[in-house]
Length: 361
Image 1 (cartoon, helix red, strand yellow):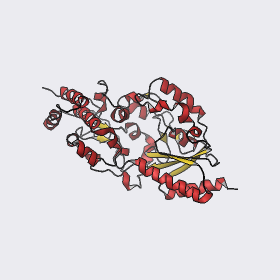
Image 2 (cartoon, helix red, strand yellow):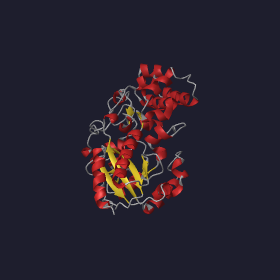
Image 3 (cartoon, helix red, strand yellow):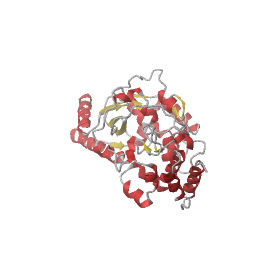
Image 4 (cartoon, one colour):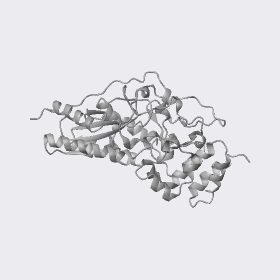
């Protein structure tokens, strides 16, 4: 007979040894979240992310992903690579909302902090597997499955149920001690590990994250219309970016951190201890023109092991063309855009043409 409560504390310790900042335990009842998920999908807020709908309610039912699941171990790993700059109001010449770190330099690319280093999927999956192996060494063979944003899992709901934090109005998990600059990973297990239970929310009357969104993608507190979200537009959307949203994207070329940057709880976010999450190839301080000049071979080589590589060179150029169209006109930017007017991709040509149309003369 195992001491399951005692095992939980051992698992927390092993998780900390593996670099996880926190480890929690959730039950598998996500039924309260099913109605919200159904409404969100019915409203089309998932856009072209068909995988969000293709699994039906399996996303809210862990036992359908791994039959026999009795508990979910959820783990947090911090990824903030450098101190977040103080958010300042911006009034660029064109009235364009530029990225969080670059109000004074619209010619510089802004990339979401989580994507500046190596792809987190492999690192988290490997750590979670090591944790599962350590549990097996303690209790013997058991049934489990590891998840790192790789299957239909409601990871925020599970983390909330595990007491790791609460769902913020920007839909991300928030904690008192770490804000929201972290990744989540899960292990579904057939072990009867007691749940930790949810914590209370602490957003209060604050709406900073909702108010700052450049594209007003939050249609209500706790509800994001992905079709307007810059992260969706620059990463998930495969085709043309809606013309009316392009001016609102500023110089953000991969993802957007604005709703996190203004969150008061992120003042307490610790820096990551993982070297793999440190910026690579100068992506935290790169000029748009420089990145736009990369050939497809250069893109693939320099971004090997980066989450950015999955969008492909074509969408990379699409995104940067929009950013160049939003930047203050400069001769080098115009030259860079003109060099891509004959690109083989109609998608790239369209966005280059739009960018050039915003340059006077």
